[in-house]
Length: 488
Image 1 (cartoon, rainbow, N blue to C red):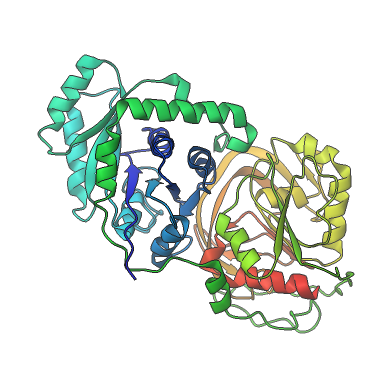
Image 2 (image 1 turned 180 degrees about the vertical axis):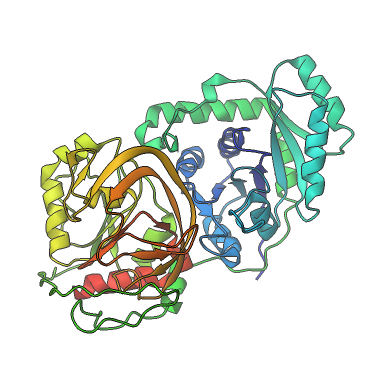
């Protein structure tokens, strides 16, 4: 199968050069022309895709060669780009910056090559003139397999400055496809983990995206950029499909392993599993439907669209709820997924919703499957910065001044509602909080990188961890979780 969706990768020499402004502005500008635009983001970032979705009216999707493997980048891209006229892919960090110690893996350049897509290099020209030519020449020549099809100059000070930059770049042979002046109105506010998510500033975010679109439309040659996108090479892979992925994943063992009995064998890597000596509590069966509640709202904005698509493909009815406002879980909830976000910002409000905290605790106590990542882990703790949380886990959480950030290579320490002991997965950590203790009597994961340690909590049907994972890499996770919902 061969597919050739027109596409561009927006990259930069370094973070802070203006990738998000240009990529989001291009998406919105193309959409305003009546094009169906598919938005994508290289790497594990959850926040930028929210702005992309606002610009295009479509779900923002991530392309991460570390979390999902290089072989899934093309299929996941085509899945997101179905029915679209054009795709814009925002890069991560600098063009050639990848996973630490892994060479080009998961870099923007790596993804551009996997997608056979031309690159538009966004250069912060605020403190240079002729030197811009040396910078661009270096990025163009570093890897001949990466095709830099043009440059967009950002933060240009004046007409005279623009002339100097254009004259210098004539020597490189790389066309200038846009020139953007300094424009504070397109700035988006940041805090301890980056940009403030769209869900927390909807009206302001709409204004910011509109300003980005206006700036890009005024300063860029949109026709030339569309022409460059159409020069992308064909992809000889099939689009990813959630139903096919679930159907081809190994079926979970039935009945699901009990929490009693002999311990399973030690998984690869020497992380010994642990089996709690306590019975599962019976839970009443819901007569109709298999509802999996998924936390959302301002406090829980981090999720990969494919995770919920896999849950639905496995047979779940996915129902969102807002822990800040809803006092009950969705009717008939048989399983619960609480992803990432900013509960530390909303700790008082989450704590004040005592009815929902009790409902979550009751569901977890019943043995129903609960999957919690990062923010979800904090919400299940006894307290967060002194504010009472759900109390599912006998652990306390608090903000710190230290950022924990990076990819992780993990192995499931024991059997859980998400994975069998020994299952290998790759994940990502991104937080400024700490949970004490950092692991339960039965940890969720043994981490191999950057140092060996165990992390997270598995108890009854609960799997709680700091690790963000992309389930497209291991569709059996969703199948296993939904099957446990059926049988618990």
